[in-house]
Length: 527
Image (cartoon, rainbow, N blue to C red; front, side, top):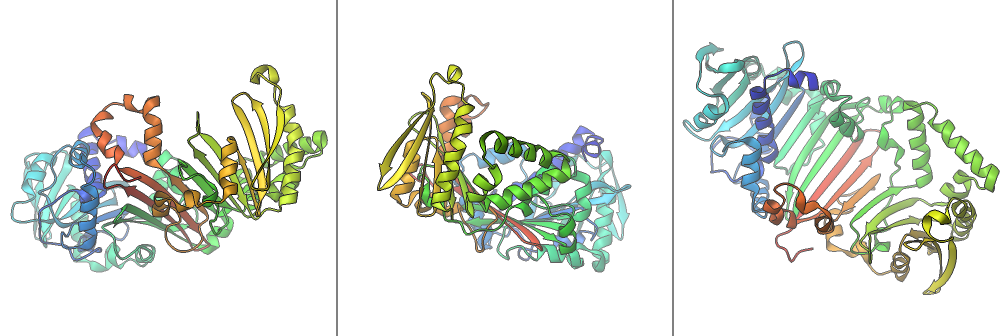
């Protein structure tokens, strides 16, 4: 994919980036009322061939609730217009009517070519965009009875049925061919419609990535990240929707899986069993980041199996470590520790009196066995500490909080690990106050409005949950160098409006669903 991309001249790459930015940002950019689309699906998809690598669509109908909501949330970011114009390079506000789309088409031996399809806002509305994006026409042709404007670099444009088609000449012709042959369009392709059918009906933008496109990005950094939430080997395709909410934006991804292929290619997330989240209440309401997963024992076993398939020898190395601990300390890391960690695990980072501290919490544990496991682990842990480097010899202490015994191991003057087992929970933290907050049993993070806005979103049990307090992370990062980033001061107001970010992943044999929820505050008084 990288070689294909950089084989094009810089001017062409810039135009492609502009078109992709339109889809990503257009829906929150204020446009005048135009004519054109007909709801979330719109009419642009009729120009997209069924073999398209990818398709992205944005609903720009000012009368739609989603578009109005997206504008309202976008208005909370004072420099959004500047950000958009900086990314795309020029004002695109006069181009589109009620919808705009971008499609990646397999042309010229399978190389992807980008086609823009946009509803036109009125007579001559696209002229300014075309002049700025492609310059003055260098010639004119005709195809299927439509006039084709030709530009330098092999670019072309045409207008049909109220839509502007702009891109490489071959892509524009492919769009006209598809409109003339409806049975060959993405709108009628069974696989595409099956994959896209998982998207919510109320959305302001959506995208579809076909299975054929995976080969173009496999092996790249983008491909690696996307494969985590898609499982290229078993997926029929990926659909993405952007939804506006009163609190911000939600991005929902659905990868439709072939159950037969999942058995032989389970994918990274298959190692994470589903669970019913319950541990957020044990964490401080000021927690900056929290990761929650299900049964730790099943997760570790699944990840080891996957690692062994990718890198033979991983399991053998783990078994050697396990055997060494068993031989030297009589401690079996799998049976004596991991198997005792219950059916849910959460790890969080919160601001402390000095540096942030880390807390790990487990649910569904046998308290007696958990205490015994930790006690048996203490000996090898102490043995690994070098007092000459830490400044002191490790020391134990005990205390009681509401009738619960809290054991602490001070490793160095600045590092203390505390733990307690209570009510089927095990809490281990680098700050004794972290255990105390869990034992006292207040609402904690679970009752925090920011967590409630983006935490366990949607229905159904997740396989993994991630929570980030962006506002808190920005506040933590400013004194240690965030303000030194170029142009940070200019956009500080925008950063101050960021609230929290939540990611929920749910998996089964038929689908991987990922929902990302971003909270954008209305004012500085919001958390």
